[in-house]
Amino acid sequence: MITATLVGDRQLVERIGAMPAAIRAELIPTVQRLGFAVETQSKGAYLRGPRPTHLGVKTGRLSSSISAGGPDSRSRLETTSSAIYYYVGTNVSYGALWEHGFARRIGAGARGGPRTLTGAARARYFAQHPPGVKQMAARPFLAPALQDLKPRIIDELRAALLRGMQKSLQS
Image (cartoon, rainbow, N blue to C red; front, side, top):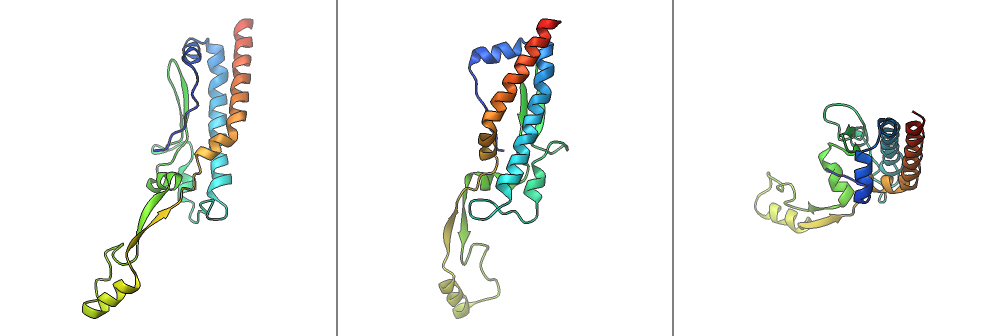
C-alpha cells in the first residue's frame, strides 16, 4: 500500500482534535475535495503519457483502481474524533512496484524456460537468451501528484479553517 502524509506539529494536531463542530464541518468536504483532486492529478498527469517517465497505461486497470468508493478501494475519507484523513491509493498489486521501481528476471529461465526443448536445442536457446535481472525504474504516479497539489492543499485547508473559525465565532 502506498501512503502519503502531510505532517504537522503536535500542537496543530491537538488543536484539530479539539476544534468546534463548525470547523470540522468546513474541513471534511474540503479534505474530500482535495483527495479527489490528488486522484485526478495522478490519473491525468502521471498514469497516461509517454514512457519512460510516465506509465503509459494501456488497459486502465490501475487508473480505475485509484478512485473513491467501492469496498476494496484504497481511496477513501476517514474521520475520527481527532483527525480527518483522505487516503489515495490503489488495490492493484503492481501499483506499488511502479511507484517505487522493481527488479525483473529476464531471459531464459525467467518464466521457467522452454519446456519442449531438450539437449542441444535447449542449450542453444539458453545461449541466445542469457538469464539476468533488469532493474525497472520507478514511474511514480501518487507521490508526485500530491507534491504538485501541496500549495493548493495548504491554501484550501487554511481557508477552510478560517471559514470554520468565523462560523464558530458567529454562533
